[in-house]
Image (cartoon, rainbow, N blue to C red; front, top):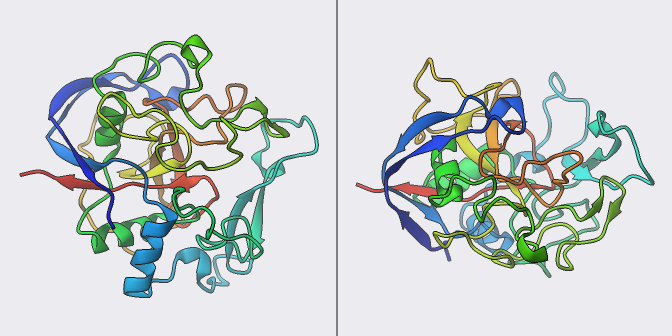
Length: 288
């Protein structure tokens, strides 16, 4: 069953931030047409329905082109370090795991049978686009995604200026000392069931934390104001390792000392051909 769509009004808002990371600048005014967005990220159970209906094979499950890659089929998996490390080198906590894919998020010995309501992960950009096409939907553009996440707010977080108002954890983000001590977010170590944390003002769940989400917007080092964005509905061809898409929302791996990106304005690049254990997606639909 597809996720319920939430119809959102069109509007004008101030996109971006100059308070955190340079790629979020400049702050600029954006007009968004009415559209609909799925209430929560696509789950493991939902992605399994798509696979069963289409026999689609994700990039992480395909044989690799030896002229481009020197590895067995697989994906990137987060692995906690034994103690404090130099946070400038992400390779200390990410490793390529042969056999890791959406069915086996952390490797061949893992599975999703007991987490059907968690967001699907280990999906590369074309894998997300393929699902959206099958569902008769599309991926949201970055401007649409941020507009939806803000839900009419202009504060640092959609719920206000404090990350944990009154000591209440509002999203699934890293709790502890990154990347070696994970105390769990409300008991969850890794992804959490969709909707486990409070929805935003427009009833959208997990717009902050849990998993990063693919958008249809190609990433640039900062918001580009000199050229119109490519169509949000343009189909994706084969994954281009030289092209990165903009991710939004942050994930369960975001920690203030390393990745203070669990905010609506935050953004991150990801190569189209890369699947990881902390990236998922949700779909959108154009309203006439």
